[in-house]
Length: 303
Image 1: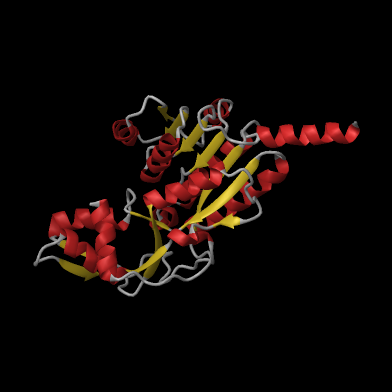
Image 2: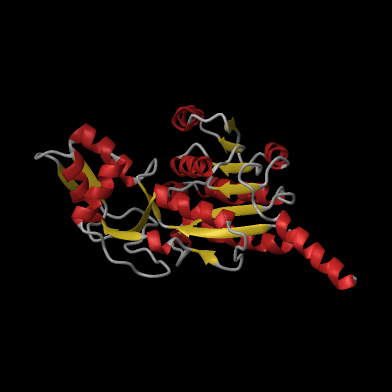
């Protein structure tokens, strides 16, 4: 009898940790951003009916409301560094996608205290209020590998905090995903080039031979949501969307960009590397460089 009881207890725990899309309550921090919106759209497409997004940018929230346009999503104005706000929000959540962060290398380099406040203290607020959730998916960065800048340092420490939460809140699942650059996301180099092209018909690049790994927003959202909904997630492993990851040389991306959005008078200006920037990022495995033609195709999908 004791063995039967034990088996039934284990079965109940395993079932309790499964995610039912229609009844689960999802939270996307930074949900009004490019990546957050893609995660929300993926969840909706799969049948989610209760999604909450929190972010602190009013303009982006209003844009996201129009872009997503679903009665199953609530966009809430709030800051992850506000302990009381986060504590109240987390009481109503089953699954968290944590995308909110200071993401720009140069801004983190110039404002390390703000990077620490948002990327570490904000993350801790969410983690410390997560005792009643089922899943927590933390979006980290390839810049947490071979750290050379403030942003990468905050993402690496954040990974340690998330992984430690598996020991603190046993029974919950805390997963770490390292994504490369998100192609075409808000505030990316493509955004900067679009503004520069409009102003001076010239785009600026730091080092023509610089290389970066990237993933499209839709592929990244697919991968992240799939990990979150798995019945058995390896919490000791750092998850990489390797099969979706591609690589570009900066001068090739610049040439492709001008082919799609420039004209015969458009030009490229080399300005030198910014503090904290690597010439070549590290990743779990190398992948072939995209050609200019391939990059043109990717750019047309984000145009």
